[in-house]
Length: 217
Image 1 (cartoon, rainbow, N blue to C red):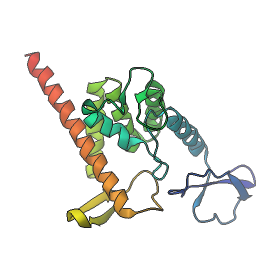
Image 2 (image 1 turned 30 degrees about the vertical axis):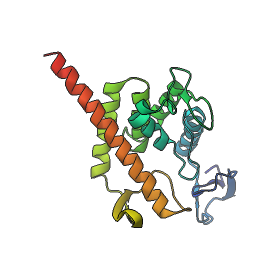
Image 3 (image 1 turned 90 degrees about the vertical axis):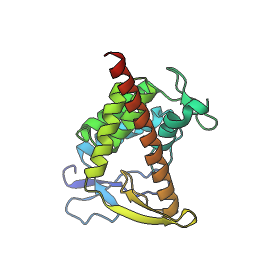
Image 4 (image 1 turned 120 degrees about the horizontal axis):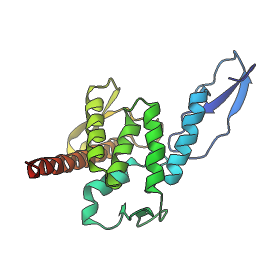
């Protein structure tokens, strides 16, 4: 809010990537559905999220407002496929989309976002996978393991979606973005892929940590 005017932002965009300009209403008027009064904290987050997306080295999913899936799958399975793997300081080798991002800058921006969330949550998860790609494996393990623990114990709304052709029922945690359009079964599939790849990465990092521990004995 600014004086007698409240600045509003649209917060529910789903699969529509079209940006919407902020607009103002008189302070005290009812806030329209799907919008929120902008605060100073939100301004900082919006700027950091714009930087995160700009620096993110993998393709960004506009419908979910996240780039985590390809990042974690490249960590889990990248050894079998040169594409979508870290290419040093310049960025990521991609089969399609933007040829390069900036891994270091993406990590720094995501770290700031994680700090705003108190070091827990989905920004910390994203930071963990960036730390993995940056070669900071011990830090990545601590961050990703803490995220898994947080996710298992946090009070998040779950949506049960049945995937008919696999006879599987998936409980998907409410994401850090609003999924307001598209196929809910696809949303469940993508969440399952993220969880499977993340679990594989954490197992790999735990194995490495144990090997180093026994090597020092």
